[in-house]
Length: 150
Image 1: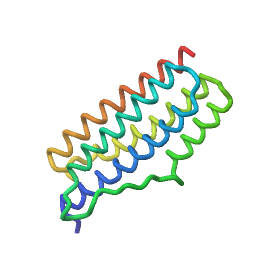
Image 2: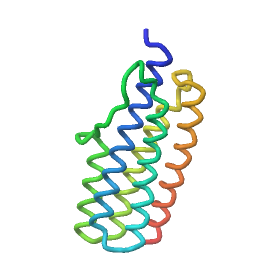
Image 3: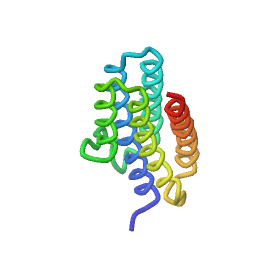
Image 4: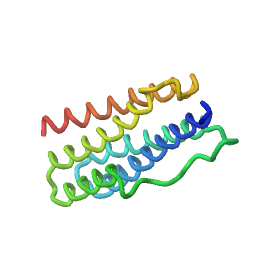
């Protein structure tokens, strides 16, 4: 049976991987975007993921397992960012933002899954994850609003 520390470590590492994917995705999008407002937005969200990871890593109990550095390049998030790349290549602002919104949906869902059972988290981890979820939700809503107005 897993302990709370093991469950917390697993949850934190899952979110670290999601933020790694999100960071990489927005870096790629930022490199290829031509419009200054999108470059700025993508930079902000990329930095947000980097900051999220720094905080999440500080919460991983090192006696259990180190924080993971990998991405899920075969998962849903990667596919979402490939859609972003294709949309950017096509130069269609609305498609770019739609693809980014899908990526934010994946990140949002990952946080929701972890928050569904807070008994798997230490109180400090639960509070941190909730704060990061709120930031991810704001990012999602910002991308959605831009997409709706594109």
